[in-house]
Length: 290
Image: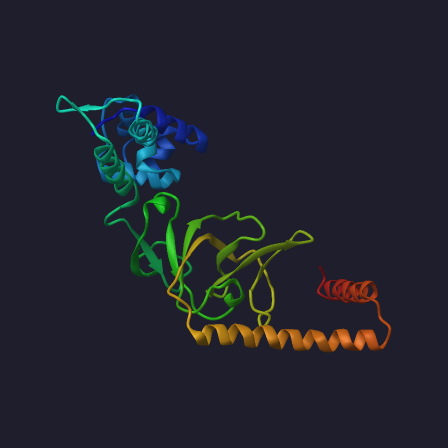
């Protein structure tokens, strides 16, 4: 295996994590002396180890080996008709250049056999990617390799308003500190796995469904955010899914229309109604001791 770029990029990646060689070696399950030889170029890792390092740092194998930059350089040369390329003592013609470009493009997108574990109900007290949590595997495209860690099969209709339906699969990145507004996978203290929006209001973290039939859940110390959703993997939705969405939307609209009509009939302005709601929320928080 060609080592060009690996020692330098491996050191850069490790420095960004702030880990020592010994700490990283322990996480990668290799000897510290072996990692030291990788970083100095005196030894080359096998592909399985290289892939494990790339997944740990959330980069591609091509990045670690400096292949990405060289591939781009070659693409630029092939696309430039003014640059003569000799192969077998003869210059490459336009059709030959296009054939090579297509081959390079296909090699960049195809990652045969790279599969992601699909999790079902996540169980507390065992590692996230334990065999007990895995119900299958999903082959993923090259742009996701090294950037995601697991997939989750969705159950229920709590995220239907975000286009995520029962039976869909969401592809996730392990992340304990997501940003508000991202969709997260949470293991609640009662061992329930749930998929919701992550929100923060007045410093309190909540998870929120994309379905008005579900209430917000305030996150407690025992709740664990397992990751955030990067992509949704799904089949085409059925007509029943659309009908269910319309039903939920219309039901919510009817409820709010009744409130709005009553407010207008009694001369209540929007600003006043907003203030009443805020007062009720503040009162509820005081009762709850927050």
